[in-house]
Image 1 (cartoon, one colour):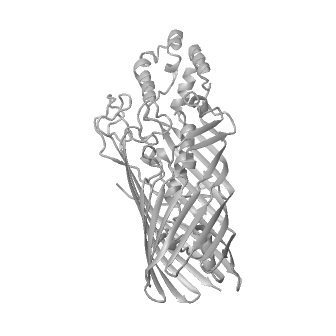
Image 2: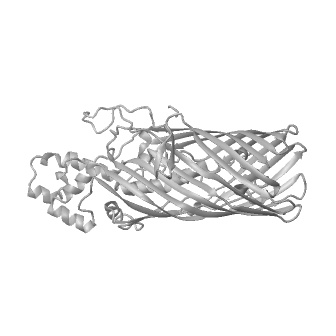
Image 3: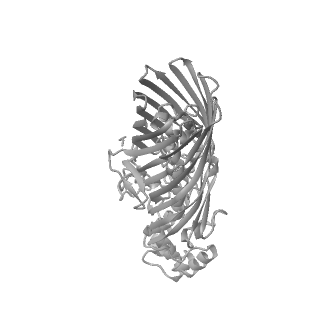
Length: 554
């Protein structure tokens, strides 16, 4: 491996709502503060400088006078995706999937005679959604993601109050690939971001041992997706069998009788294929102002021990945007053929099928989304005068993503078909059950003061996945992950510090065939999202993060 439809609308919207938001968990807290990352994000009892706005606003009372904090974070990543066929692979008796089969198109057999050992669909570059352009921008192969942040705090002389604000990115993630990449059926381009551009904060030192604080975050939230679509489904296999075995004798000899008996299906110029491309979909959603708040407490009864906790509220959003669908010819021909026959028209009317599927569809879309709440608590303890250990536990309410609901500005032909299979679908809305879970996680960090100027740090954070085992997929190339961090602080003088930090996140996942309903489930009920039905899927993700932080007091 190298490093670095029902109908298209229903599936692509599902991809957008479910997978891009789940992918956000991969980027959570990786771009807020590089010093915290090197401590395994175990900083609730000892929050770092002005970034305490996010990690524990009570920690702002540690900042005296007027202080500024500027940092730059660079992230480079590799996402590898591998597909292979298990023994006995087939979809309704067909296994000549060009994704994993070397057979030529003129091979008369429906079964593959020469499987590829494996197929790589690796991510090729990073992608970001640019608000002004309202589009996803690919950074190009080899280009890392850059996330500059900054903040300012002020503690009036003799006051117990500290005021602060900062701009930072609680969540940034995105990737892309060129046309023809095997991984494009679960996202050719994906981008999601939450950027806090203003965060007025206040902290109060109750006494020498206790501090409290609060911050209000005003954030921009966006997500975007472009994806190819295909549906290796048993019912699509039936349609292929009808096209190749039943309709073949009537191709050039159709008449009124055959049209009535076969519902006009054989009049289609192109037949359905479970391995064929069904189209392409682009979706973008954003909200310019998404407010939330953080509440923090810090208790330090001795110089050796401290305790801290923070609650980061949820943020309920009404995201709005646009969608665009490029429908492939085969499904359009199926509906066209169905409506060319009197019996086909009756059947379509009974089922509520559309009379026509256009080459392209576009319009406005909206969805209610809740950015999940988070709680974290931790301690710091000096086991030696120069050696401090931090330990945190945290919980994120990803169960709030149990169901997403999308609303459209018009009736969608795809939804007219999908509503036959689910009570969660109407002509203009789609509610998708996701079943996410709310995991607990922990992190540990060690800080050693080598001398008055130099401090060394190391941290570890095993990240528990919020995605159930039966929902894993290649668009979220992570299940469980490990985050490692190393860093140092050099004090130039009593008012100026420089942090140099590095982090490494890794994750491997194995999704055996028919184990995930969001990737490779087989059967007649996998229409919505299983582009790799029946295939074994493996993913491997590596993220390298480098950063520099400059802090000074005026």
